[in-house]
Length: 252
Image (tube, rainbow, N blue to C red; front, side, top):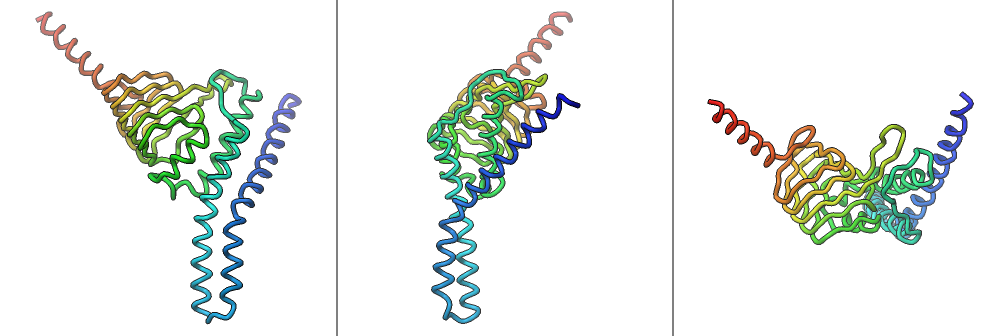
């Protein structure tokens, strides 16, 4: 019981700190929207009831998008200014690196839970992940908001991250936080709701099937197709089936 108190205390302090950061980020992101709202509020004082209600409704909806884009920029700029970047390695759960990982995750979750759905498949998604530390090629398409640990992510040109796909640069094993880069080549297709675990390397023009789970440290050869749970190579599966067929024919 006595050993759990420091851990609970650390969690409480960190939680309150992130609540404070959320208040600051959300508050700052709301400033441009509120300035616009007050200007429209004052400019429409002499309008009729319905025109004024419509104008205020428009400025509120516009303000939400202004808030979202501002939040994306604030979160990204904060990460860049302080150069917060995750390092590959294995760390205790209550180490400095683990706290830094939690902090980076919380920065991303501010956007994840408020606005990211509106920027998927737009240049704003690429801007967000680049500002959070990801190395992206040209024309990368993100159709998923479940892309975590951006500073451990590398993606080549023309790759598509399908709807609901999960990319993780972290995993917890035996009480240790493990951080590893995820490297994805050019012209890769990540199918909808597939899962890419830390340490995975995916070659150019490879395809990861829908709902496939690519286990930690998997290596996908260029142009190969992986599917299933856990994911396996279609090329390798066909090779094994052919080998078994040949072995059976030789026995006969």
